Image (cartoon, rainbow, N blue to C red; front, side, top):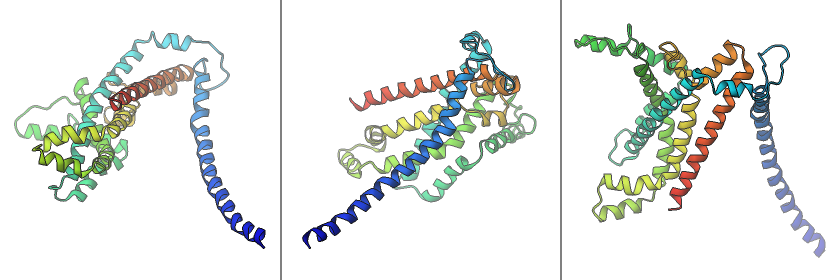
Length: 304
């Protein structure tokens, strides 16, 4: 009787334990299969193509490092890379500042209509990048844009938003920052709300004002989230494509062609799949280097 009672008491936990172990493994396995199918396998194929003269049809031949050698001697590639880096340098700080400002305004105790403000700030992120580009092209068109119409109504002259390469790039920076502010804002809201209120209460007793509290308490406390926001925005900026295409199509001319546009035009319009694959892996290495550098800097800051 004692053994049977012991067996009965032991068996159910074993079943539950096996169930709790099996379910996560099944879910993880499904994700691993999807990741391997849609990320690892295409990456392997792209890496193989980067060492070939594949054109998208027919057979191909292995040509070694010729694609990479030609790529690093291509001035058009360097122009696209330089413009991509410039876009990232402009976009990342602007989006960081706007989203952090919006998050602080929304979580402020003195803010009214915070719930409505969150929805308004978040709506642009829900829009398709194509819609965002078309909307901002309508606002900043030279001949039909709303902004130039208002400027001319007040006696000014039309601004060459599309024919000037630098102004055209700035318009895309503002459009992308506007579209991504909502997503980064949500991350900052969650981080700010996790900061203990006692920190602010103690700082208030010591006579610290709102700005001092923000610099000494808020920013250090949300440093991990700031790292994530900067990393995600940097990666997003380095592979930006649809906003540029729908807003100015890389114009005027090809002055604002980014690296992803260069890869698309080389691979799909010119049929140089192998050469475009080499450019894709250079972009991947750049993104990996950026992520590693940011990770090292973040760890050093946390260890101080």
